[in-house]
Length: 445
Image (cartoon, rainbow, N blue to C red; front, side, top):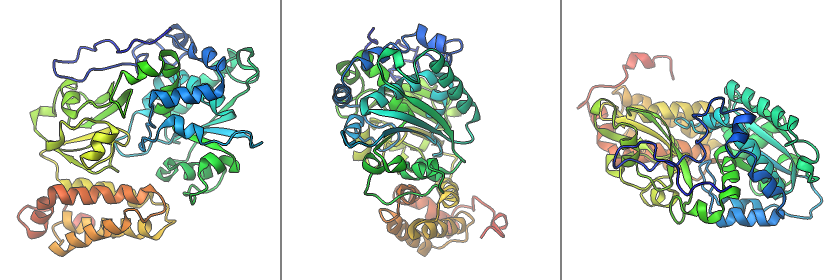
């Protein structure tokens, strides 16, 4: 049974986003997380078709679909799968990165809560395609309810003969383990996640070798995001052409856009890649209290800021990059004109300083210095020279840290200074009052 080319119109106002429920279409169903509901809505229908297909053909299907990783980098999924060496005599592993810790990012958690079997079916198909017999789903430790739902879903699938030995009589064996992390943001970096899975401290590894060659237990490993793997069953059922009929040429398929902040109806909006913030805001009831948009993040706090002038930028990997930012996880944190940009950036930097693993100097020292300078600025104690030092420090972190956490801290600073430098200057020259009282910072250094 093929999925429709477009989902039902969800009643979005004229000019709103064309909502296309594919990943989220079961969410309104009673007990959407159960095996019975999943099976009654086309669930596990892609699995027998996939297991009857040669693994290499499944990899080619994913390549043809154009699916790009939904974890932030946007790397072509099928190409990533094809990097695993075949006939090497080593076990292959699939690891699902569900350590969702980016400020503003909140799409994988509801996917696991509302439709865990979609992820499990995607894991089985992916494992078969890459010839893996073990899969680990690494979930952020605080996500207790999602962990329980996944564990229960794995047990349901095993009892139904969909997991374990000789799945559906095909001779394919697969074990899925749900692993709870300890709440470290750094474990969202794939190699730090692998170290944590192996029982080590979560710190990024030197690359190369890449996980495709030496990943979990030094064996070939594919690390994919939850939303990426949840897309796999739909692609197997609908085909590559159907998937490419949604989204844009270079960024096909639907995407879950997470709207938070000053919006009337915050939440998850699944729409084709390339949808604009203006369309999403129309579907979400507009700006809260009709206070105009000032700035937003297109992909979480680690992506360069966009101003209100970017409201019509198509939200896909290439168009967002061309406009000077990154699509990331499509976590759109929306801020109205009442919010101080320096204050928002300072709060983000406090997070990145706290979550730095400390392994490399640019990130460990740089995030601390950026935070100290921003504290002075938001308390009205900074200088114009501080702004230049801050921009220079961010530039020295960018591209020089061991992993992307340093870049995540640097890009909001640089983009804020580029788009809203006047706000920083007004704070340090006294034209606007401090946004944080200086006495609140006593002892905070």
